[in-house]
Length: 135
Image (cartoon, rainbow, N blue to C red):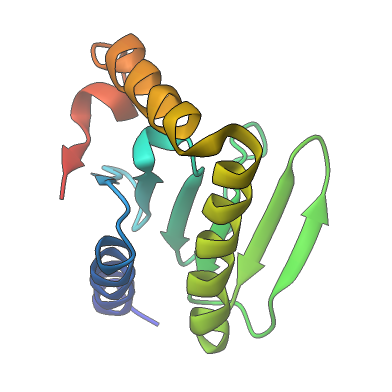
């Protein structure tokens, strides 16, 4: 798969997430073909779309890897879901269920408060937060 595939999947995820009502931030890596999407200012975690294994110290909850044949779940310090291109619909389902679970736990007002807190506390942080674009 190529960088074009990563861009295509990225667009498809963004379009679907926005239809589901997510606020989406996007960051394109400089040194790799990876694209990072933060959902609802990180409250609903992040998605990494890439063609290679990620760095160990960075734990993205949702990972779509274009070079993966079969999806799997990793239970390390943080739960990580890995999806192959064939698992695309499952990825979309899982991000929706994840958000629904968070809203059930914290309530809609609490969830929105977490979003606002993340947005304002992280707005000027280096890296993703200062360089990502709202899409």
